[in-house]
Length: 120
Length: 114
Image 1: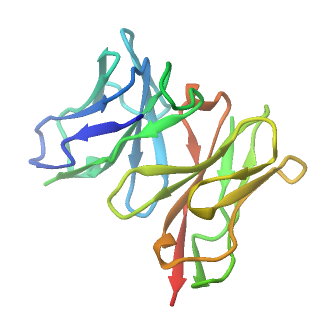
Image 2 (image 1 turned 90 degrees about the vertical axis):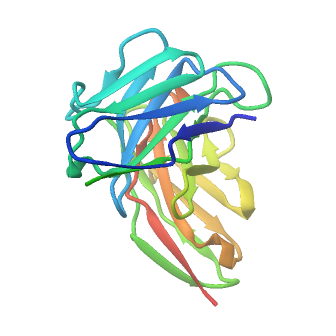
């Protein structure tokens, strides 16, 4: 249990276009999902906290108009990188917080496999 | 605010030797502490976590970590390294467990020498 998927796993786009990344909790409900960004050979930086049915909370320095987050259901959050530029190229990882049931701890986040974005 | 410091961006050990990856944290309240492992081009996998209770925490793949409040440390150890342990390891802290986004250290790349 507690599987989180991301789609796509890799995406290459032209500068100026928008890219949508999906994060799904496959076998549990998640009121809260988190989006992280990982630069090459560096750590993960929390970008925003996504709560189902409400606006996302962005970390300081993250442009909310550039990184649009939607958490429309208890199993899906999306991150849209708008007007992407080469400096947005990165590895984007989501995680989901377990809120109920099954065999997993409720004090834990489960991470997706990540999406590698390359902007040309 | 909380922070995490991982000493050593790269650690190299021989196969069969002790693995020790260091993590120190700062937090204004009792923290939740985590160790994650990341293999190339993959997401993070939880190795172990400390929430409350026993300070010595055992995780998967033979890893364990000890929470030492007086030293604000949560070092990761494994008695005998295996080639498959080669990966990037991240220490992380949060104030409310899964309810908060995690603050990660910069990571330690573990190299296993044959």
